[in-house]
Length: 156
Image: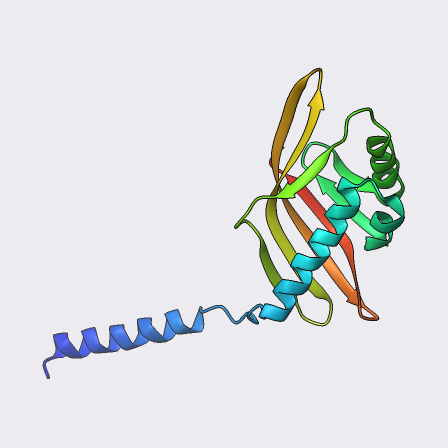
């Protein structure tokens, strides 16, 4: 083997080792975890859509941090004051998950990350208003109960 071929072989082997070392080492999302989060998302937004605060509010931890691109960090108390006001408006705001947008990723010894896009609708002044936004929710599983501890709402 000539020196040019030897150098090419060494470079190829070295590059191959570097790229395999950079592969993701993340635990895959199990079908069970995905289904649990899909279920919890539907429980939460069914409560939202029916304006059922007694079901909705307990789905969040009391140390909730809610980050919104156009509102900053919103504390727990303010989050639920805002939801309470929304639930008492003349119009009914509803949410639907955008089909095919949901991602679920495990968080070791904590819970899961839910990422997706959702659409909110309501009638205002005789016209349907629709907004589509992106979100990240951190779900904590504690004592076999799922609750949201962090929300990032963006792309408003």
